[in-house]
Image (cartoon, rainbow, N blue to C red; front, side):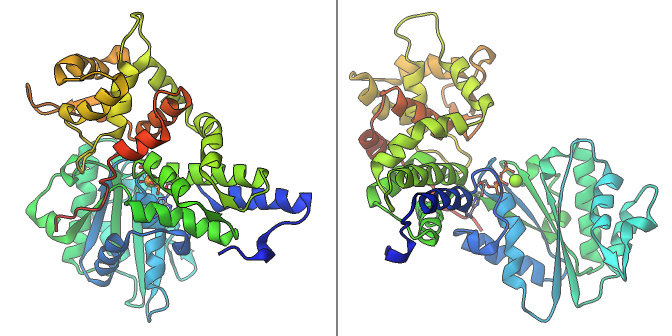
Length: 411
Ligand SMILES: Nc1ncnc2c1ncn2[C@@H]1O[C@H](COP(=O)(O)OP(=O)(O)OP(=O)(O)O)[C@@H](O)[C@H]1O
Ligand SMILES: [Mg+2]
């Protein structure tokens, strides 16, 4: 509930409150404090178990932007306060890194005594040296090494070499834990899945965030500001986000700003609506350009925008794919006439072609194709555009958006 204390009184106080609101949300950066992390209980548990078990390591993977780095950065706080001291060492993999360059980044951040390990390795570093150095840590200090952006490493061979090094760490019962984090549909996209490697490498899939988790992101931050949100406005933000926390932060932030500019401490639906133009302009230029490329046409009366809108609302599977038939209902609504697959099937194919920016990608075989957005961030953007261009209403989004992003784990 709103406490009167929180309500600014002067012009300056309102302005200060706007700055606080801008800071409270973080659309542009991973979460770096455990208290700011919403949800993700299942994954936190699994990571904690991994660290606590000798010889266990993990690979965290999922779609772009679902919150992998945020989780990897913060989960270890859960473990602090115990008898053992944990040092979390996050490093980002870079396309130009080779084995030595990557481990040198880790070594630079590891000290034995007062000396950085990297000082001992002016030249190349080989897998055996990694195992040797990491086994020197005492039982009381467990390093957790996070190799973020693992997918960016050039070449499968290098990734396999790292996976094998992890296997060696495991064989030697080294207490250090390695967590590889990357964009992938499955672990086999990142490394070769040898039985022996999989035994020591827990696979932790990250799905898009659930409705409850996304609500938590907004509510937690607003309550810290002494603000509240109308339930319709909250569900509007959540259904627009399509399970992607970046957008929840962006919508929450910009809507809170609008509310405060109107000298209100409760975020209403109108504030979300008023915030959309700034959310559109805050969205990466690349996404905006791709959208325009996909929807432009010399022919009048084309329905690319409508097809994309329907696709942005469709129910998707765990990998983000939808079936063409999933678009029939929303498209019928947008066009005001029956939309059979035969009407738009070719559009879907064309949207996979380069001259439409390959905004969609297809999987499956003839007649059983499934599609998804090549860039997941596109879905909320398309909905924002649709609202702005008045091709779709908030009520339609509410009615048609399938919010099936509840985690479905296959253990
Ligand atoms: N559990 C969470 N609670 C609150 N905010 C989150 C959570 N997870 C992610 N976010 C927010 O979502 C956005 C994307 O998160 P993050 O960068 O961790 O995703 P990612 O999967 O690592 O993305 P990429 O694939 O681009 O590396 C950030 O703005 C971050 O602040
Ligand atoms: Mg990341």
